[in-house]
Image (cartoon, rainbow, N blue to C red; front, side, top):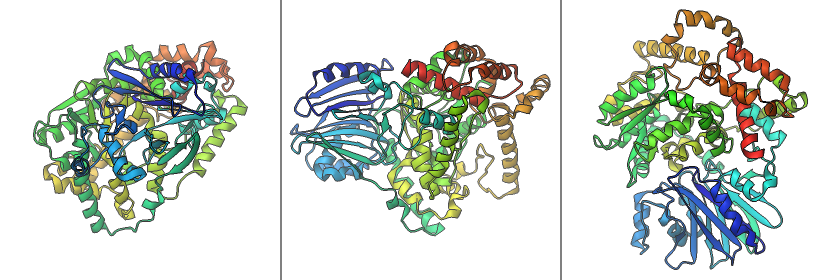
Length: 605
């Protein structure tokens, strides 16, 4: 994934200059990436960067006019055009389509410039006049920045593998974090799977002054939580206004932009509020290998109403033929934050890049606007684990529940998005720039003022769509919601779609073990053809059983895997055999075991 890496030493170290190149090489995943280095012997700092050519950050190193400030920035910043124009009116010269203006925000606003940044990002700023080095990241911490520190040096990178290139002793997995991964799908509390490697907390600004490190935060979520709750009509007026104000930030680009359009509400809000001229904003929708799902069918109608071209990007047979490549690349690029169940992300986003290098999505809209949560603990079957190690899995589950935040929106924004959902981000960003207006700082701020009732249904979202484009408000959603959501027709439609969604889910990873006995009957009468792929894009349970069964057996039944100290190797063969035969559903266990084994092979062994 594009990003930055750095070595900050207390003492001059010639070794750092040579090791930096190895760190950069570990981050060069595609031939359309570019890379560069910056060495400052005065500050004993070596910095490297990798970016997609032409992206927002492809302008490093970023200097001010006097060359006494230098910035390294990874990610994107979504600023109002007026703020950018104000900088130009003050005599600064820069390209407003890339990160070069951010250095001038620091010149004009000093360390308060961080309050003006907006989006997913991290960066390093060196102020040679003040003798300071600043490390910073976004408020949520979604753009991951890993670090390792000892008495002599501080190493940071957007990718774990770069730190391990410099310090091979970091190639160790901790049992505590591994237990949390099996229970929660991620490590908790800004720890990682790897010993002594940690994550910079969201909203951080860490400052090096003469070799000493001061750790502080520039943002506190309580500033948002302590706002007064608005009445429904006032809230609606404000959030409608905010959406209209912020969307131009995400459409500001000299490169083509495409919209990731689904059958849901969040991407439709983007289409309704942006109201782009016909033909200016091509749309696409992901589809599974079985059929055009509800997302595709509805998105085509939405795109047509808006006068935009629509593309269907489908998982085809070449994905299965090259599954080992996509599974291993996914785990490697995301540092294990995205599991094998996300192997299709790189495959699909490679195809998105053929349409446009920038992708706008409705990601996080349901979490921010409607209290939707997908974050659940799911302890795998203890039969497949060493008895002592399984206690770490149970402790991970308990720790997750203890860490739950009292404010539901904060729980989604500051736990679910950066801990769980951010795993998909580096896979997407390895191919395209991904933008979502639903984590805009102004939208998040107003979302905290929503009445509880507004976050419990679709009413606000439906009103925004209808008020901006009445024709879009009359189109069904993939959940069967129609503009008049309380009408009898809408309720029947929702029940039908809910049934098909559940049938699709239970045929896939949600299938109970006992249902495996009925699979031959279902296949005989071809019942699955009536619902499989209606909603879900991917179906890893049957894929592990059929299309990629040979890969599952190759990895999990290998002696190297079965000898891992945290596993009960004797039971792995039974698990794989029962799943492939169809007697039991171990899709979730296979997913996590495959992922963890790939982590060991790619990062440890």
